[in-house]
Amino acid sequence: MITTTGLRKVYHSRGRETAALDGVDLHVREGEVYGVVGRSGAGKSTLIRCVNMLERPTSGTVEVAGTDLTALAGRSRRANAALRAARSQIGMVFQHFNLLSARTVQDNVELPLEILGVSGQERSRKALELLDLVGLTDKAKAYPAQLSGGQKQRVGIARALAGDPKVLLSDEATSALDPETTRSILQLLRDLNQQLGLTVLLITHEMDVVKAVCDSAALMKGGRVVESGTVTELLATPGSELAQELFPVGGEPSEEGRTVVDLTFHGEAATQPVISQLSRTYNIDISILGAAMETIGGRQIGRMRIELPGRFEENVVPIGFLREKGLQVDVAPVGAAAGRKADSTLVKEAAK
Amino acid sequence: MTWDELQPMLLPACWDTLYMVLWSAAIAVVVGLPLGVLLVLTDSGGLLRNTAVNKVVGAIVNVGRSLPFIILMVALIPFTRYVIGTSIGAEAAIVPLAVGAIPFFARLVETAIREVDHGLVEAVQSMGGSTWTVVRKVLLPESLPSLVSGLTTTAVALVGYTAMAGAVGAGGLGDLAIRYGYQRFETNVMLITLVILVVLVTVIQLLGDFTARALARRGKRASGA
Image (cartoon, rainbow over all chains, first blue to last red):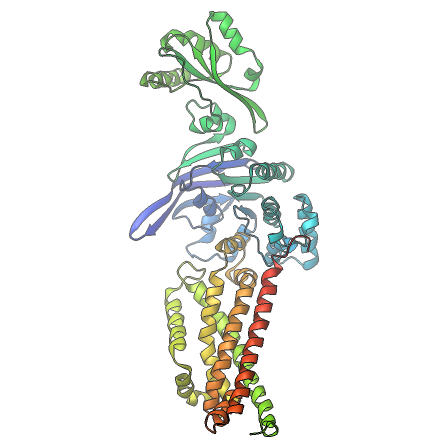
């Protein structure tokens, strides 16, 4: 639905060049919620603005719903009619809502319809329908200043949907909201995604957002996408930074010379008593250093950090057993370089 | 001079002053508003970035603002004759008054529009709005309270200018104050015209403030409105 290829955006200031985007390839499938995470300055915001050409990429292409927007925009800095028409098919919600303070809630939702040239009666019918969808029917005549942050964002979402877009871009839509409101807004996005088949590309710096709604995610650093994939794929990737961030398990080994292993359960493995089987089969004592169980994108996923007696070399067989049971096993990078070395051996083994 | 002698002169003078202020303010809005918008749009970082246009318009506005009104008025006499047919009287005074008020108001418009949150512009662009849509639906409505304040300031300044215009035969309260109050030492005429001018300025200011506040409040009424 959204594909960016080799996207670069270079800013010039005082003779210096800064690449906010340094070759970004992103692929968002139709009907999924895709989260781009990263620290501020990683280029997320530039990326999402490039998707609807609010920022013109220096090079590379952006394709949304089969239309090459970069070709449409051409060389000119101003948006031509074709690009404007394409933009009206891409909804966008903003961190600071960006509602017009001089217009009522209903008039704010009607604004994109005015731009599309929809007649007055049809506009108000559509606006009220959208306000109903986001649960704000009673606020139609209120002004934005009279609403809470969460309500403002609901208006922002209703407005973004007015042109019946296939794609919704969300620029840190929940970053100015408290945790509870964040949850309700994310739930709304999830519902809209499912009810309307809306494809959502969201950027955020909060891992919880990805955890709550995203089917897929990408991690950006210094203008590049360093990891991407479906959340399940990411969790199944050994050493995935996103998986670790999404699902942190902590815990230091109790003493030197022990092997610390991170286990990730998903699917069927999550329901099996694997640890007690391991303990019985090899007659070893296992201590659990940390564990968490969560639902990500509607699937139960568990993560656990366990400690096995003895060094890695002595635990090859138990680790093999765990892997056979369908768990993902990473040797935790605690303590020494030895751990890391072992980790890379494991990766090689996994490759076989 | 007695009240009976003064009264027949006072009313037409008031009317002349109002006539000049209203017309020149109206022309200042018609010309100054687009100029102010143009200054913002063509600025670097604006929607119609155009350094050449921005520099030229900016320079014209600056020159217009730095000329003392009394000089401007005299310098414009040939132009006024060309437009109105004469350089004397209230109608003729409207020309220099408007020319003086246009750059003044244009700068105030520029400041007001710069205050509008860029996020709103971006939001309308993301809906597929053109630059014209942005101006019409965002920049002007969102800055309306400040624009009204700017217009008030301009109108008050114009009241002052009309007094100067009176000196070159434009009529109005300023003319009365200078000819009778100053040149003939009629202190009571001077006092009465001053009081009327003060009242006039106060009324304009109050009206402007009230309107600006009402417009700003539109979006900020307490809940339940």
